[in-house]
Each structure stands twice: as structure tokens, then as C-alpha cells.
Length: 225
Image (cartoon, rainbow, N blue to C red; front, side, top):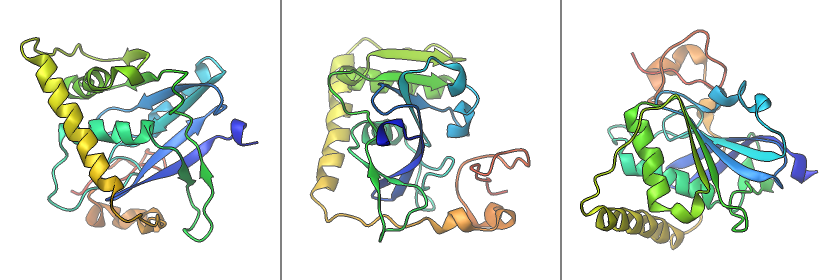
């Protein structure tokens, strides 16, 4: 049944989609797994089976990573954009099963919006910049975070002076962008043609972030050289 379904899902966003991967029962307590810089959700493939059962583990590819859509050429990847992507995934009511066309769409809940069970976030393998995004989301949206688990990370430091005003400003800015998008006509999520591209040509046609590595899994995307 749907409650025991695991696999890959897509979340529609204005610039394309955010790719996610789920493990375990969608009725279990949610754990959002977030990778580090130049990584993707496959970093959790070996870790998730070793974690306690009974949880609903959901990992996401940040924009420009893995199978998530990249931004337009020349568009920078800002700190706040990654934070807002986490919010998009956490508040998503349903996602499209990967590989399905817009004419035959099966929507499945990610299971991350249940208010009765606060979010548990699992972060992994990031540098200090990565940890800043993790801590920032926890500070901006504390009601969505029950626990923050850091693996192989450096401590992040937030300046205490005027911190409340800064956090309030950033939270309102992110929420405002999503509210404006919600007033726009709905988008039809189509299959990403890049999934079917020849891997040998990706280095010259893709602006996804990620190193060229012959040992990477099929989900990995090469970086222009």
C-alpha cells in the first residue's frame, strides 16, 4: 500500500523540480535527510538501512545537485535559496512519482507536514557553509524542527547581536516568495529530458553541480570541465 511505498518522487518548483527519495512507511515519524555540498541523496543509500525502522526517511537533492533541476545559466546559488528549498519540501502536500508523464500522474504525500509529529532533520557530510544552512533553517522555522542531527560537521555560529531581527527578516522574505508563487498559474511537471541524455555528453551540456567521477551512481550528474 501507499503507507509502505518507497522510491523516488519529484516536487514541482518554478524552475523545474526538486528530486527526492523516500524509504520506509510514510506513516512513520518523518526524518528529512539533507546532503552536503557537491553531493546527492545517494549518500544515504547505505546509511538508511542501518538506521532504526519505523521512521519515514526522505532525502532531497538540492538545486543543481543530483537529479534536481539546475538554475538558469549565470544564476547564482544563494544561501537562502537552499534554505527555501528545504521549506518547499517540508511543506509539500504531494509529489509526482519519478518517471511518470504529466498525462498519467500519481501523487503521493511526502509525509513531512503532519503537525502532530515535529520534523526531525538529519544532515550529513557538509562543511561550515553547509552547516550554516542547517542551523539557519532550524532558527528560521523552529516549529518544524524537533531534532537536528549533524554528521561529520563543523560547528556553526550565529551572531547574537540583532539575531532576532535578522532571522525574522529572512523568514518573511522566504515566505513572501513562496506566497507570490502560489498566486501564479499552476505548472505542469514534465519529464526532465536530461534524465535520458547520453552520460558522455553531460559534461558539455549540463550545468548541474557535481564532480566527474566514473564510480558515481546513475543518479550522479557530471560537472562542466
